[in-house]
Amino acid sequence: MSSGSYPLAASQPAIVPASRRIYAALILLCIGHFFVDVYSSALAALQPHLATRMGLNLTEAGFLAGLFVFANSVTQPGFGYLSDKLHSQLFTTLAPAVAGLGVALVGLAPNYGLVMLLAVLGGLGISSFHPQASARATAGMEHNKPFWMAVFISSGTLGLALGPTFFAGIIDWFGLDSSWLGAIPGVLVSGLLLLYLPELEGSQGKRQSFAIEPLRQVWKPLTILYFLVFIRSIVQVTFTQFLPLYLTQERGFRVTEASQALSLYLACGALGGFTGGTIANRLGGRTTILISMIGSVPFLALFFLTTGWLSLLGLALGGLVLLFTIPVNVLMGQQLAPGQAGTVSALMMGFAWGMAGFLFIPLIGGISAVTGLHNALFSLVAFPIAGFVLTLFYPKEKRA
Image (cartoon, rainbow, N blue to C red):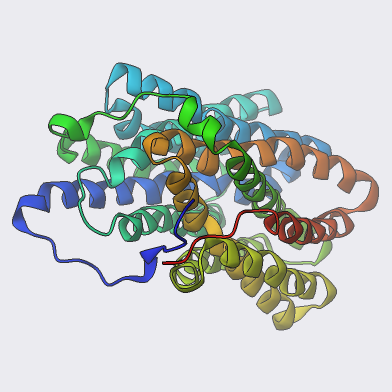
């Protein structure tokens, strides 16, 4: 069983010259992660404009978002297998360009079918980056891997936060037909990675092959942990996709203001990752999850039950507390099965997120068509309560 010690809040270790190549690769991967995840949240900013141009109803919008999440998350284990088998860095280096082109060209699509096709293309680019880059990010490091993993994960979360505002700004200034401008950073970052991302040397470039036995030995806590990530992701990913639509259609926000509110929610989530790491380092992962699940409920309820700055404060604090557990969940899973870190990371970072989005975004879209977005989204506040109860069944850590 894991020790419950997660040194995410530790001070940054000194970088010796022999390790510069490893840390240079980490910096490049963080840059790639940031821009890849800019595109992960961009579709939410585009949806209100697509709904206006094409007359999409909430069910169609929900299906589109669910398909996008399926492409960018549920397929991650498959890309992890392919990248291990083919030993090619192209899964990482080309991903920002493919993601950027797929998502940014959505604004030029003349019909719903082409929008779906481009969303899938962009989603697959996002998906191809994460398994290989996550395994590569801390490879070869001998000290403080949890801290650097938190840095890598949070770089992506910051990208998620910027995505809606970045694309809303492009559309606000140049119009939906100029959304292709949003692809430029992704193409440039792919060029940067192709030119400068070093190959791993020796054993660092090899990941352990998949084995079922280590996972079978910890299947009970691993299953609970997976469903805890799944429950958190239901709220996280559904809010991310529907918040701009909700704020524009039911609260009278301008599209740019709604995108800024989404960026606020996601930016606080990025901060929450480091805050949760500090709590986990002191109290253990299980306690951190308990605090996150039950602590997010009153803030999220405040968002729905009030208006103005108090409502936005509830949204921000709800996002911060809810996302305490992003790096913590990954590290807990890796501690349960240290020899299968890549597989566990794919389950916790991609598959759980993707399945939550694929199942619940279309479902919430359909419910919203009957009850309205306010009632449908407000109902999601019940899930962290269920997560709190489920966490009570997770084994207590043995404290050192």
